[in-house]
Length: 294
Image (cartoon, rainbow, N blue to C red):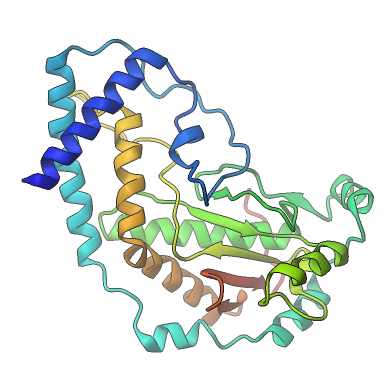
């Protein structure tokens, strides 16, 4: 009961904020933790009109939110977390193996001018700050570009991740991409502060590799469709805040469908992966030509 009252109180505050502020993009603050700042996000069209809510509306929305929260948490608790054998399988592709594949499939960029030239040629492509499958964390030692093969792979990881979330009755949480393309200069800078950084060359220097958090996840890109004739939906700002907190408190449950999606693609020869210890990321490299589907 205490948890329900907590969520109801949070919901009322969120509704009042919506009514008073008329915010354009709910992601600006919801993902803006002190230790977890996303890159610029794509502006989304409003998903529902913003209007002042009466106290009765606020109470009803908060009650619906509490029910939804209980449903989401119950579904998260039913998820079977990764077993040690699964984790072991995600830690078999050592750095040297990933570098060799990256060198054969990727392209090395020496600096910003060369990156821009490769982008114009289509040999590197932008990841996109906010998609239905991922958002970018703020990158300090890399830039959000990869080869077309690597972006197509990331899209496939996202599709399979969402399919597993759907099967588990869970919202479509999104991956957080923490690192992408590096130059030899940025890799050298990273070595000064990160003991896990490769002491020689890194697969990140070939545009074939991304790091994706296995501890933090972003809220879905927008609310799920509400059936015609159903009760008015909970305001998205309230729902997103609830889902963000649920994701923070149940990261291992969301980690499992993502890890199994990556492991499945590894078994198909599509990628190499290292589930790192020092940093809580899946570090994976595209392992074959991967035609873009969109």
